[in-house]
Length: 313
Image 1 (cartoon, rainbow, N blue to C red):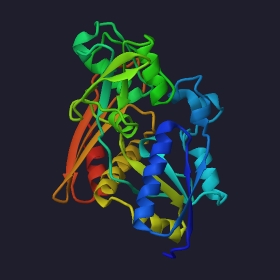
Image 2 (cartoon, rainbow, N blue to C red; image 1 turned 180 degrees about the vertical axis):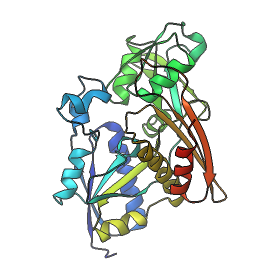
Image 3 (cartoon, rainbow, N blue to C red; image 1 turned 90 degrees about the vertical axis):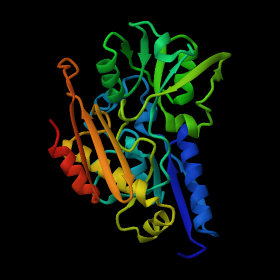
Image 4 (cartoon, rainbow, N blue to C red; image 1 turned 30 degrees about the horizontal axis):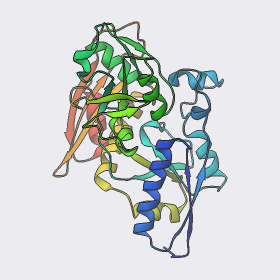
């Protein structure tokens, strides 16, 4: 790659998205000395529509598109205004529009979900009917399945906004991704002070409370025919983590599931062998019942995803 090349990095404007863009730029600068990096901040539909539940944003906009945090970035890619889009990969639809591809990921952050409370005892300090906030149907359904008497309420906004709502007493607890908390500088081993209130972090074991597909992964979307962008991403791609998210996203594709389908997926890669677990809830919350579960393993991510799909009970 030419040392005088210019790469325009596209990102959302939230605090977490800007941190992810900075991590990407740092990796590119280290891997490709001399390459000029330019950042383009783009506001997406999901950022603009904070007045409705995240799972309802597309419908409120008059369409079925689930890429509420990606569509405007893809428009910028198609128009050539940016060369790569930086995403929280769990927000990216599993089937992309023609002409785009996910080319790689940075090193994956922790994948656990975290219960955040004002009471240091965590779940033990919550009343049976405590109000817990989350914008994720996956988190809501797993929590209701494990603690059916809790009252689950929708919460919108970026991580600082959600923490402020908890500190202000709008909720008894909220659920967030550990990756976002860590990337924003929170030390989850101790309390964080928000608006003079101590908030406590309680990570949930990932093999008990299954994470979202691609949770903790920063992914890079490029134009399919852009060899230069693909080469740039290859220089910073973490191959093992990319194999895992490819498998997780393929499983969602086989399910015909989107970013807001109640599905938990856990993958591990050890000595070249990929193992996966899945927990799939009905999309109709009124049906309730036990989720379908499956496990699979192997070396090829697409084959493991297919075996996991075929094994659902």
